Length: 238
Image (cartoon, rainbow, N blue to C red; front, side, top):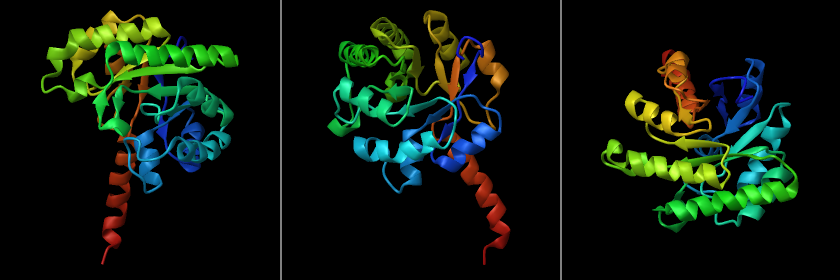
C-alpha cells in the first residue's frame, strides 16, 4: 500500500465506531493513536495506560474492521521488543509506532543507539514470529527542541539509524507545518516519511509535493471532530 499510494493516508482512530467510519469512507488501512485512545478511555496519554490495558482496548477496534491496523505503542510501556510484538500480533495488529520519549522513565529521550537497538529488536521479533509487522520509527527530537532547525542533522542521523535497524517508515514529529524541514527530511530518507496531518487545515497535495510517503493524524482528527461537535451542540446549550 505504501508503494501504491504516495502518500498513504491512514486515519488515526480510537474506537470501533471511528474505525468503521474511516473504512466506510474508503480508507484501506488505519492507525490507532495513543492520545485519542487514552482520551476516549478517560486515561492519560504518555504511557498513562499499561500495555495490557492498551491491548484490551485495541482488540475490539481491530476486530471491527477488515483492513490492516497499526497501533501506536508509545515507547513500548517498558516491554521487551519480543513481548511487544507478541502482544500486538495476538490482538491482530500488523503495524506499530514506536517513539524515543520514554514517559514511564520521566520523559527521557533515548539515545540514537538505544532507540535503533529497540527497533532492531522489534524487527527481529517480528521476523521470528513470521509476521511482517510494519515498524514506524518515531523521533521526538524536533518537538523537544526550542529551535527545530538546529536539530535537523541529528534527527536525520537518528532516522537513518532507525532505517538501518529495520524500520519500514520513520516519523519525525512536530514539523508538519514546516515545508523546509519536511522536504529536508524526506530528501534524506529512503523509506516513507510519516507526517501528522490535520484533516481540515492541511492539504494532501502539499504533503505529496514535499515527498511525504505516509500520513496519520495523531490526535488531530479527534480534536477536529471535537470542535465540530461543540459547534453543533452550542445552539442547544441552556
